[in-house]
Image (cartoon, rainbow, N blue to C red; front, top):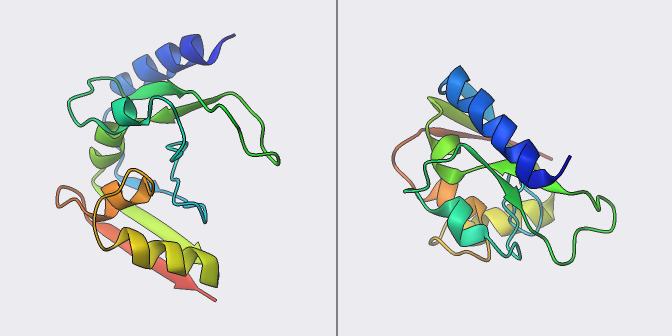
Length: 128
């Protein structure tokens, strides 16, 4: 089944389930979160708060070599519909990325859109 078809199924399921009470996000050293990758061709659509879809297929021209999978992701609007977001991080590379993302929203660091918003509280868990 194609990522677009899978995204449609997930979109319906997420819409039916409603908002999450707690959403635990990860963050890559490149600043991606969920499957909102900086180089995704449709990243702007997935980050658009007016996007009414809960989930979309993500198109990566060069998927990560260690995870070369077709991907779907929650949209930013769906992520921020959660009541609480938890972002656990470990490692100096991710801390550096976090410090950059904390400065301003930047599509090169999709996590910045989660950090720069005021709609949903974000708890940051830092570990060495």
